[in-house]
Length: 62
Image 1 (tube, rainbow, N blue to C red):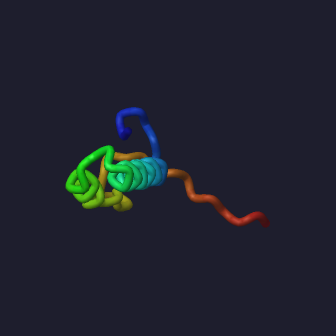
Image 2 (cartoon, one colour; image 1 turned 120 degrees about the vertical axis):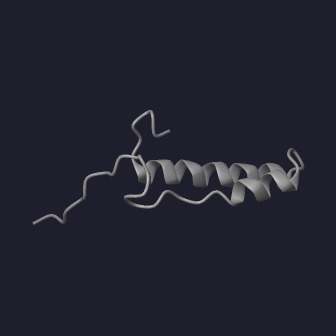
């Protein structure tokens, strides 16, 4: 994801989506619950602590 030049916020949103996908798959018994538990431990990227690009700040309209 970082190599494709996604911003940190987009990476975090996609990781959250994957976590929800694995939660659903575990509820449907498509994957073991332990797989979901492992995926759920993945943390979000922190600002300034990864190689992910930061998005530009959105300023309020004058």
